[in-house]
Length: 116
Image (cartoon, rainbow, N blue to C red; front, side):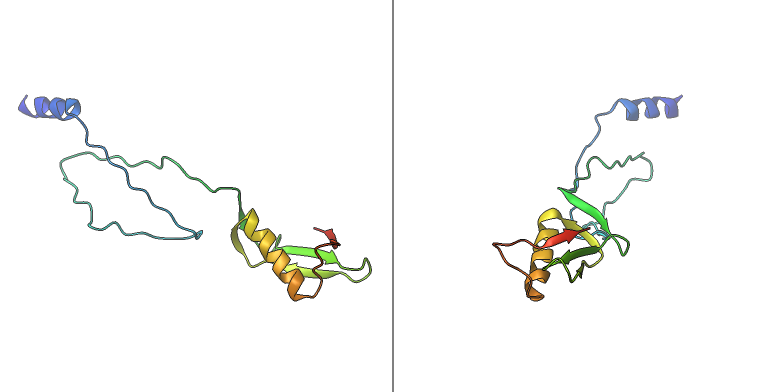
């Protein structure tokens, strides 16, 4: 009977809540919580993922979808290849513009013909 009363008391006791916020700019990461959480083996614990935010990102640029094809003159076609990974839309735009400039095909007054 004593054990049942202890279990009921534990169920009715106020629960301790706390949050841990983790963030990373990468797509694959590991974190270590310091100091480590010391758990009481006689208690029950629950863990939940509450929120995941990606902020306008395309989560998977792969070898199958990382090519941007354009023509500066409508005759010769060139390919820009983006490295595999996850990017914000602004990062994709910046990298395409950087590679256009590196290829000598950037003209802010005349945009190149493009095909995805």
